[in-house]
Length: 408
Image (cartoon, rainbow, N blue to C red; front, side, top):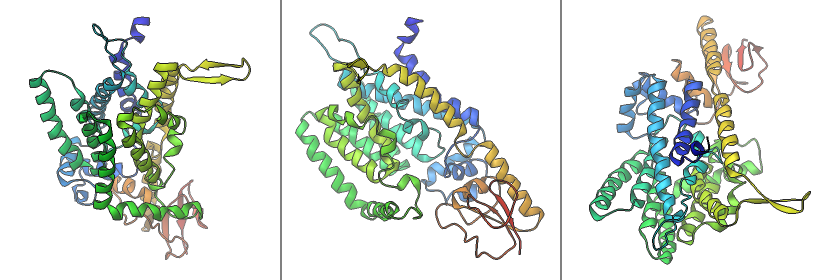
C-alpha cells in the first residue's frame, strides 16, 4: 500500500480521471454554452455558425454524436497529457542536481495539486467547448518546450510544440497566455522576462482594447446587485477560488514572477481566466512546502503544525467529484425543461425562458431566441398566454419550481 501511494504517475493518472468519472456519472457536460456544442454534436448542424468557435472545430463536433463515453475518453486523453505537460514544466523548478545525482523531485505534485486544491481545472474539464481543447493543448506545448534532451529530440519536441501552439491559439485566443509562458521558459536572463511581460500585456491590450474595456462595464454590479452580468465576466469573483493559495505568490520563482502577477491581474479583471493563474500559485505553494513545510499556528498548542497537503488533495478531489455530479444542469433539470416544452406544445403556447437555459432548450429541440446572453424576456409585459421556464417568481399558475403557465 505504501508503494502504491509513492507511485507518482498513478497519482497524476487518478487526478486526470476525476472529471471523466464525473462526466460519466452526470451523463452531461456542465455549463450553458456546452449545450450549444452538444446540440451540434447531436446533429443540429444549423448552429455551427452560431457558436463561438472556429468553423473547423465546430465542423468536427458531429463526430462525437451524442456519445458521452466517447467524449469522456477524449477529455481524459487531453486532460491527462495536459497534466503531464505541467509535470514536465514543474521539473524546471523542482529538480535539483548535485554533481552525481538528482535529489528528490517534487515536480509531480504540480499537476496533482493543480487538479485538486482548487476546483478551477476540474470544472473547466467538465465543459464541452473549444476552450477545453485549446488550453489543454497549450499545456502540452508548455511540456514539450520544457523537455530536456539531445539536439535531435529537442528539435522534434520544439517542432511539435510550434504546430500545437498555432492550433491552441486558433481554437481559443486566450491560450496565447499559456504559449507565451513557453517563451518565458526559453529565456535564460530573468530580466528579459520583465520586458517580455510588459510587451505581451501591451500587445494583447492594443489588439483587444474593446474586449478588455468591456470588463469595466461589469463594475456597477458592486453598486447595484441587480445589474445583469455573466458570472464568469465579473471582476474579482475569480478570487474566491484561489483565496486560500493566493498568498503563495511570494514564493513564485523570479523567472516567472512578473508573468504570474500579470496573469493573476487578468484573472481579477476577467474571472474566467483565473484558472490560468492556478499552476503559477501552486508552484509557489510547493516551493514553500519543500523549503519549510505548509504550517498553521495552533493557539491551543502554541506551536506551528504542519498541514498534510496530500490529505487535502484526497478530500478536495473527492469533494469536487461529488459536487460536480450535482452542478446544474442535471438530467433532472433537463427532464423539467422537456416537461415545459411538452406543456407548451400541448396547449399551443409559446415557451419563454431565462437566457441561460436557452442552449439547453435548443439541445432538447425547442427553438428559442433567448440564448447566448441577456436580455431575458419581459415576463410581466409579454402578451399572454405563454409558458415560462424561469428562476423568477411569476404571478401565474405554478406547475413546478421553474415552470409557470401564464394565461390572460
